[in-house]
Image (cartoon, rainbow, N blue to C red; front, side, top):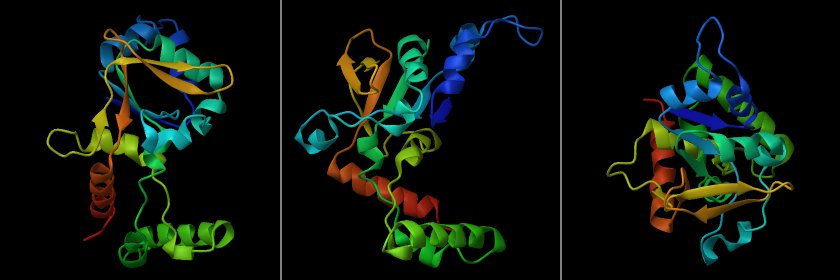
Length: 202
């Protein structure tokens, strides 16, 4: 499996690479042989009224390199699951972690201090800021496989279309290789609890 967050520039470039002295396979052939699934945070999708506010959202990881995301969405040879902006935007990190769990060692204190530095300049809440978990959702999908956990449901199979202006849409297709995370309220609570537990230090 492969987790991608940020722009798709590297994966799009891989698809264009020829074979070389390390591997005779092209990048596309190597991806098809070695990568079973890509879990990526990209795009924004709306399937019902609960996510209607995100319908016209042009997500950062897409708009910063639109051609790369277009190439990935259209040409990547193996299945991919998209965690859209609407997923991580509704799942927030708990201040409990930062306040209680991240000050016990020199290493974790770095994170504590860095978060305090950022929130002091960007929010009014300080350490009470509940940061969205955009990229972390795509990581959780791979780090804690879904069987029986109830974190994320997936859409039916389909394809993701990336417009020239960066807007993403999902089109159902029985032969498609893409799926999109779907998050209901009960799952949102479970995912937030999972992040609290995984980010805590004993």
